[in-house]
Length: 173
Image (cartoon, rainbow, N blue to C red):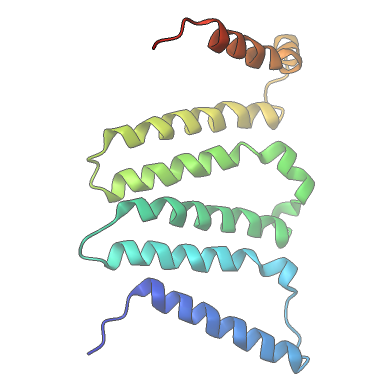
């Protein structure tokens, strides 16, 4: 019996679906436009990666990072392409903090898939999670104070101060 890897099987199914799509399009079958369903490609690729991790005897939990990020980004983009919740691409200006949260979730999945052995994986979970959780209410307009508006205008000063700190500190040879 031939052993098939789930990731390879999913990739083959994706290729077969793409071929079927192209054949149906050439026969002028009414199909949803690719501009609406392209995130499904990300979701299928993510499913292949996640299935590969869970099917292997010698697990490689690091593959969960791109798998989780692709899956969540695909689902997030599907909301926009299908117009669910009347979301449009312009709404990404307010919803960009979802992306750091997706990255944090990816690192958390790697940590969990690795039987919670690598404590260092929690650092990006905390950093990206904090960025997303702090920025999301701000970008959605839940916080509207004078201090916030002033901070929003002057935040580039943090970059200037950080650059000055890096250049001014003594070199360690």
